[in-house]
Amino acid sequence: MVERIQHLERQFIKRFGKSDRPLSVFFAPGRVNLIGEHTDYNGGYVLPCALQYGTMLLIRVNELHRLRMASVNFPYAGEIPLGGTPGKVGQEWVNYPLGVISQFLPHLTESRGMDMLFEGDIPNGAGLSSSASIEMVTAYAFNELYGLRWQMIDLVRASKRAENEFVGVNCGIMDQYAVGFGKKSHAVFLDCDTIRHEWIPLDLKDYRLMISNTNKIRKLSDSKYNERVQECSKAVDYLKKRMDIKHLGQVTMADFEKYQETIPDETIRKRARHVISENNRVIHAVEAMRKGDLEELGRLMDQSHESLRKDYEVTGYELDSLVDASRQIPGLLGSRMTGAGFGGCTVSILHKDQIEIFMKEAGKRYTEMTGLVPSFYAGEVSNGVTALQYP
Ligand code: GLA
Image 1 (cartoon, rainbow, N blue to C red):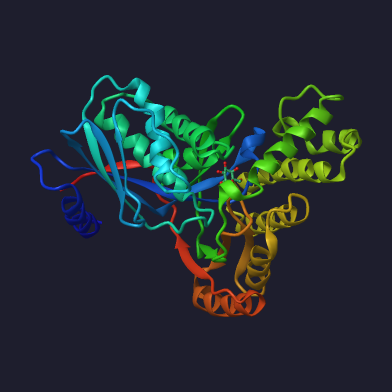
Image 2 (image 1 turned 90 degrees about the vertical axis):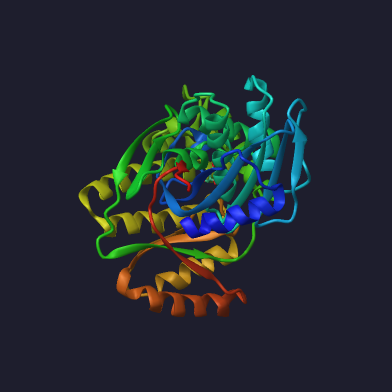
């Protein structure tokens, strides 16, 4: 970690110059969602974990009354005066920090500018929340350096608003929350209605979290994500004729069986069925984790993928092929897409002795099916956003 920061410090000085001002360093992880997909914006349950991959931010006060933002990963660099109102810059990465900054600007009482250098090792558009990671590292650093004393939940909400209002994706709260409240060796069991969580110990014994990337790039803002959000709200409108509800997270499976006929549109009915059944699966997954029943957790993950494939229709050929290829490998307890879908990654629970074989065999089968070469990452469940001591 120290070497990574030293290397970044050299790049920081090259770009922004030397100064007597201290350099601060922050880190925000990405996340992988174990189960509970497309439930967050429906007031349901989710079960994500923070990862060891993430975004590093080096930041230092400047004398320019301006905010300057650069990245090691992308060529585009942004700069805005502190008094102004930032506008969106095409599809650039800088929209994530800019969106967060626009949430903070009205609350800043001083005009010290900042120089910021970002560096990340989360693959983009892979469903591992590279965007929430950039948002949260920005929010955390601003809160510290401008002495705002916002609570973690305020930083989570500001980052979510940045994505909803500035970037234009109607995402739920899961990603920013997991990045904020992640805890080493634990999953974050979050109720997205009450916004309360419980940390559930994740003891994988001889198994590991394996993350496999289809390497089919998806752009969340271009995707059908917002369409699914609307379909769920239509389902609620229909069900409201018979039930007193605000969102699908309040509907039990038994109620759904009873009232599903009030939804005349078959597609909308399928969307609702996914959300309601997935919500149930999260509760069962938490029970399984508490009992140390990894086989059951794996089965629930498999069922989750099938529901996302058939009822929610957010998987697509690449994700389905990767899940199918993975399930052929002995030692695999379960496999499913993670994140928004339409491409990106799968998450699997795999025996540690099978990792090499998995990467070789499942990778080969996937390439035969799609012509794409997958990437694999070992998922280590890590802590949430934090300041790093440096030097
Ligand atoms: C994206 C969104 C989240 C959530 C997932 C699907 O990651 O940012 O809010 O809706 O998709 O579960």
